Length: 150
Image 1 (cartoon, helix red, strand yellow):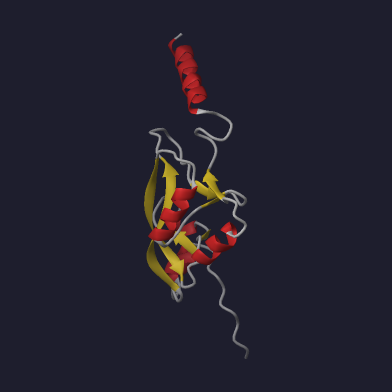
Image 2 (image 1 turned 135 degrees about the horizontal axis):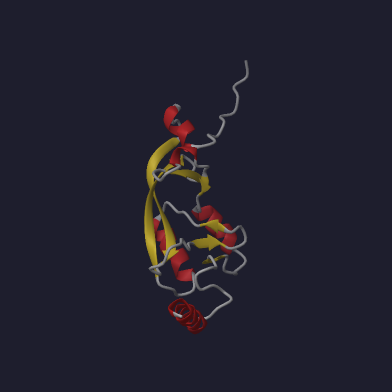
């Protein structure tokens, strides 16, 4: 009988209830805007609209320096990462066991993405995105508050 290629787990439940070969508990890092409002606005790989999740703190720092200066913070999350460091399952949260794997940004992928000299990273739009300045956002909030008081 031929040895079949290992099948990647579909969710965290398959990792923790299976033999867990090739997966280990690690700390992963991500960046998000600090804003004091409801919502999650992470740093992303722009072309893929993919949240940046990294196992190496020094690589995270390099990516952070490439982003536009915004009030932001580092998040630390427990993950089960595969041995290649290319995918991980977030541990914790309401639907963690059924959650699908997330791609990790590796140093090799970083080198590939930045080889052209263009910046492939940005903040996800939404809070104050590419379409609105800080003063326009403040004006929008003031106008909305006036309507609420009326």
